[in-house]
Image (cartoon, rainbow, N blue to C red; front, side, top):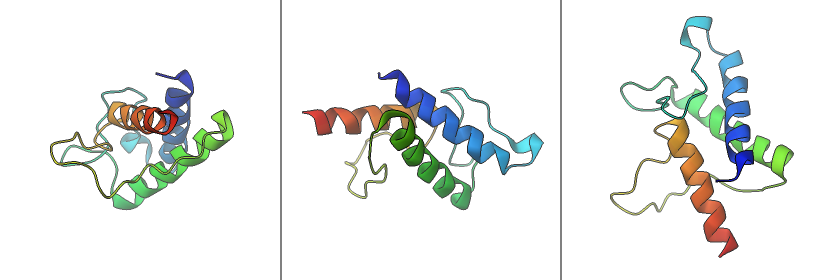
Length: 99
């Protein structure tokens, strides 16, 4: 995986964490759950995070990508469930574009 992906995702997490109360800030770890019953981000914060990731990818790596896909196949991992799943989602998108 391109290291710029992790760098961009973690920078976006830093930006979102700035808006969260200190006790609600999310650790910069691949296992950090973002959504769902144990997730740390509400829907508005999740949208901010996705926008921040797209912006960081553009600024840090010159990569323009839309992370949201409304046609994910059934049975595919939720791409926004955790920090790691976001990174894998980006990696998959970039691989499809490069192919």
